[in-house]
Length: 196
Length: 305
Image 1: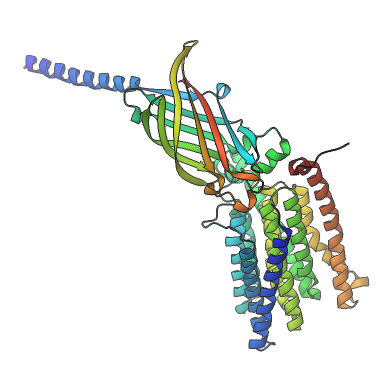
Image 2 (image 1 turned 90 degrees about the vertical axis):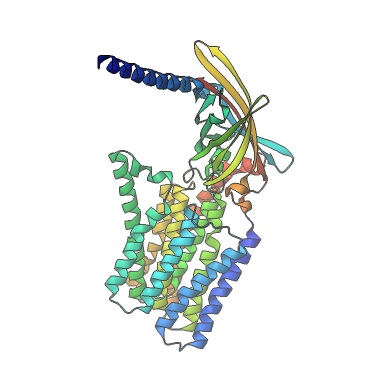
C-alpha cells in the first residue's frame, strides 16, 4: 500500500515538474519590451504644394512589444501615439492640425497600431496589424528592420525602424480640407525597447 | 481650402429650394391653413439644407464620427421632426416645451459623444461632477435662450428674430472658420440661407408669420448653439466668444422698451437687426485680428516690420 502511494506521489511530482518546466521554457521564449521614449521617435512628412516636404513629429508615444525568437509568429507589437502631441515646430500650425479638419484630437485622441500577425524576413520582421487613425481602422503591413539585441547597464535593448506611407483620405480626413498639404503622408517610426 | 464661390452657390441653391417649397405649398394648399404652413417651413428648411450640403459636396459619415456629423445627421433632423410633430399635433403648449427642453438637455451630451470631454464619466468623482455641471449649464443656456426668443416672438412677432438668428449663425461660422476649423464654418452657409429664405418666403406668403417664426427660432437656435458648441469644444474659439455669440440674439428684447415697442413693425425689426449686428461686427473684427496674427505665416505671407 505504502509503495503504491509512493509511486503515485512520484508520478504526480514528475507531471507537475514537467508542466512547470515547460511553462518556464515558454516564459523565457518571449521577451517583453517597453517603448523607450527617450531613444525612440515617431515622425512624419507630407508634401507641401507638391514641391517640398513638411516634417513633424509626435512627442508623446507609448507602446510595447514581445519578441519570441523561437516562434516569431507569436511576437506582438503595439504602439499608441497621442495625436495632441503633434509638433511641426510651428505653434499655429500645430493648433491647426489638432482641429477637426485634420486630426480632430478631442474626438480621436490616439493613433494606434496593434499587430495581428508577424513573420520573419531577412533583416527583421514583417508585421501586419490594425492601424487606427481618425477613428478609422485599416490593415497595414510594416517592415520592421533591425531587431539586434544590446545589453546596456544590465538592461537588454532591441530596436526597430520602419516607414509607412498612407493616404489621409483613406482614414476619413476630409478631401476638401486637404488643400496645399498632400494627401499622402509618410510616417517614420524608430523604436527602441527596454526589456521589462 | 475655403472656396467663397462654392459657398455662395450653396447658399443660392439652398435658399432657392427652401423658398420654392414654401411657395408650392402655398399654391397647393389653402394659405390660411397655418398647420400646413408650419409643415412647409419645416420641410423647406430640411430640403434647403440637403441641397446646400450636396452643392458643398459635404462628406458626412454614418454612424456619425465627429461633432459636426452628429449635429447635421442627428440633432438638426431631430429638431426638424420635433417641430413637425409640434406643428401637426395640437397638444397643450406645455408638452411641446417639455419635448423641446428634453431635446435641449440631450444635445450637449450627443455632441460630445465619444470625445475626450466625456472622460469624466470614467474618472474621479470630482471630474465627473465637473463634466455633469458643464453639460447641465450648456443645456440650460440653450433652453433659456430658446424660450426667451420664442416668448419675444409670441409677444411681438415679426420675422426679424429668425433673421437675427441667421445673422448670428453666419458670424459664428465665419469666426469658427477664421479660428482654423474650415468645415465647421462652411456648414453654416446652407443653415443661414435656408433660414433666411424660409422666413422671408413664409412672411411674403402668409400674414401669420409669428407662428412660422417660432419654428425658425427653434431650428435656428439649435443650429446656432450646435455650431458654437462644436467650435468651442472641438475647434479653437474661446468660451467668452461662444457665450457672447449665443446670447447676442437676446438683444432683440431691447425692442420691448416702451419707446420702441409700439413703433412700426419694420422699424422695430430694423432696430433688432442693428442691435444684434453691432456685437457681431466687433466679434468678427477681433476674430480677424486673431486670424491675421496666427494664420498669416501659414498662408505663406511674409511678415514684415
